Length: 66
Image (cartoon, rainbow, N blue to C red; front, side, top):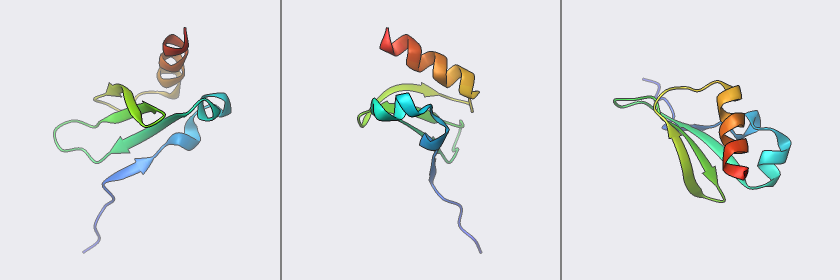
């Protein structure tokens, strides 16, 4: 039986500028919700309980930068 991964690194979906500023994006295998976590330098800064569009992610990063 094949085991699915517990998480997937989605950082490659972020704009290069956000990556260089220390942001990363990770999807975790759902238990009750489908969490996607935005981190900045290893600290969680925002969590979606669904799979957000990349536009939502980029807007959240912009909001955090202001």
